[in-house]
Structure formats: structure tokens, C-alpha cells
Amino acid sequence: LPVSLILSPASHDPTELYHLSPVSRQLTVQMMQNPQILAALQERLDGLNGSPSGYIESLPKVVKRRVNALKNLQVKCAHIEAKFYEEVHELERKYAALYQPLFDKRSDIVKAAYEPTDEECEWKADEEEELTVSKQEEMKEKAKLEEEKKDEEKEDPKGIPEFWLTVFKNVDLLSDMLQEHDEPILKHLQDIKVKFSDPGQPMSFTLEFHFEPNDFFTNTVLTKTYKMRSEPDENDPFSFDGPEIICCTGCTIDWTKGKNVTLKTIKKKQKHKGRGTVRTVTKTVPNDSFFNFFTPPEVPENGELDEDSEAVLAADFEIGHFIRERIVPRAVLYFTGEAIEDDDDDYDEEGEEADDEEGEEEADEENDPDYDPKVRSQTHTDAHTSPPFVKISGVLRETLLSSSQLCWPTTLSP
Picture 1 (cartoon, helix red, strand yellow):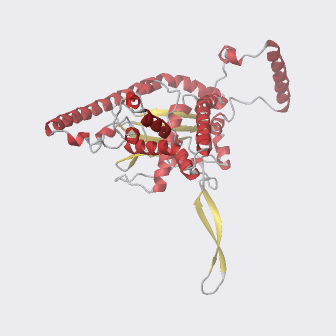
Picture 2 (cartoon, helix red, strand yellow):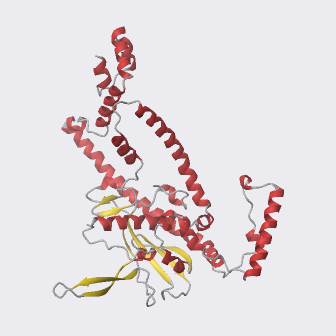
Picture 3 (tube, helix red, strand yellow):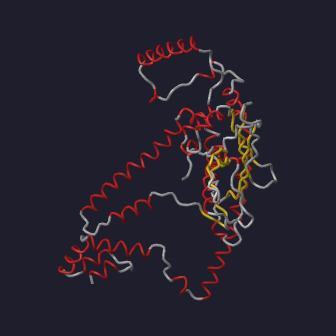
């Protein structure tokens, strides 16, 4: 009886344990304290999680008909939800026009087209950031001496040098794309803008990277366009959860001769099979670079991609979404590092909790004679790995909007 009470998937009244005889109750308590029994119970419960109960299949036909009616209502809800997201996109376009003058002024300050007034430069720090008066005076004096020293060495810098390059280097998602040979080019990046599709056109957005004249390419603007879809899939309407990126297109970069950092020249030695002579062959091969971002893999009409292309597009969609939602609207906070600190604080809190829980788990595992470190390692990895991109009809899917995105979001969902 105790074993069936513990391992049975059926629901029991907790008081049933106290209706057992004293001997049975003592045996049950002892079993509940046995790690092996608890592990078996957990395994049984894990097996039940998410498995069909068989209840739906056992329903009478007349009830199944009504369930089908509910499903048809759900499909109609999905189509209404799609219209909702279309209106969200229209609202986003409207407010983007309101933000743009502020972003334009930011760009003018960065590239030294506008010098802000003293009033515009005043910034009151938060109370937590405020220092004592004496400390402030000491820092001001030190800063004044450093500025005077710099003034003697060189002229005043114009605007905010290397603004966007610093932003990129401060964000892991973007810095991972940067190579050393990209940095001299990105020093000429003056602005990044987001342009939404016109009313009545298919849903999309374009990232515009504006460069000052430079020695690397003749383009003044490099673009990356992301096309979206906001309608339920006919074959799987219940999977709809908002707009999805379905493909992206880059642009042609008109590189100056010898300046194309996306290609590199290598020399290989080849030996003639018959004569045995050796010759040196020069080949041009792809090179790692941030500017490969503007030549993404093309999605074929059938939507089927090889594994490498899927991985590249998955990362591409994530980066494009992040630049649009976080980098462009909050660029100065990524330049100073404040936005990164906020993100780190959020993760630290979770990390501390996870560390505590992990410590408890490790203590329990050391006392468990059946503990297998390989099994724990796999479980730990699965629990902390981000879910893969969902693939719908052969196209990698990334949900872009939620009702909270009626304004610029402050967090990015993992």
C-alpha cells in the first residue's frame, strides 16, 4: 500500500497517509526519506509530464465535435491577433517618426554638426551616484588638469569620436562579430537608423548604417532589410505568436581596390603529379568580418536551408532585432556601459540564485550513492541552454513583437 500510494500517478488526499497503520506509516516515511525511492518517484513524474492522458481520445464523439468547434474559434482568435500586431506595427511606425528628430540631433552631436549648449550638457546624477562634496572637488580638479594636459598635446576632438565603434565593442553580441581589421572602418560610422515599411506595404524594417567618406568603400549608406510576416500558418495556425522574420537582404558594398576586408588572399603550394615540380597558387577566400552582415544567406523558395545557413540566419535575425530594439534607441547607454550594467545586474540576481541552488544540489549529490556526474552535467547544460529557434515551414522563426512593445522596450527576451 505505501509503495502504490507514493508511486501511483493518481491524486491522493494527503490525509490518507495518516489513515495507515502505524507500521505502514513508519515504512512510508522511511521510504520517502530514501534517495533512491525519491529518484524513482521523480523519474515517474517526469515521464508523466507532458504525456497525453488519454482523456481526449476517450471522449464521446459528440463532445469531440464541440472540441473541434473550440479549435475553430481559436483559429479565428489567431487571425484577430495577427491584425492586432499589424496595428502595433503601425503604431510603432507612428512613434518612430516622433523619436527620429531626437535621434537626428544625437547624430549631429556625435559627428560634430551641432555643439550642445551648457544647459543641454547639464546632467544630474542619481543619489546613489552622488559623491561627497570634497570628493567631487578633488575629481573636478584632477579632470581639469588632465584636460589641460590633453589640450597641450592635441586639438579638441570633434563630436564624440568612435561613438558607434565603442557601442559595438561594449556589446558582446556585436563585439563577437568584430575583427581587428573592421575597427578602422567602423570609426567612420556616424549613425544607425531604423526605417519601417510604408503604410500598405508588406511588414518590414531596414537598418541604415551611415558612414562619412572614407578610404574603404564609396557607399555612404549600407542597408540591411528584414521582411516580416504577421499571419497564422495555414498548416499550423496554433503556432502563431506574433510577427516573425522570414528573410533578410543586404546590399552591395562598393569596396575600394585592395580594401575589401571580407576577402583575403592566401598562397598554396601545389605539386605536379607527373613531373614533381612545385608551384605557388594564389587564391582569394572569404574572411571573417563584421561586414559579412550585409551578405546574409539567401532563403530558397522552399524554405529549406542547410545547417550552417540556418545557424548564420538565426544569429543574423537575433542581431538585427537587437540593433533595432535596443542599440538604436539606447545607443548612449551602451556607449557609457550603463545599459550593459543594467543587463548584468538582472542576470547576476538569477545567477546568484542558481549558484545557491546548484550548491545545494551538489551537496545532495555527493551523499547520493547513485549519483552519476555525467548525468548531472547533461541536465545542468540542458537547463541553462537557450531554446533553439523555432522553424516553421522551413523558415527560422523569431518572434519580434509583444503587447509590451508599444514603446521602446527596456529588456530583450532571451
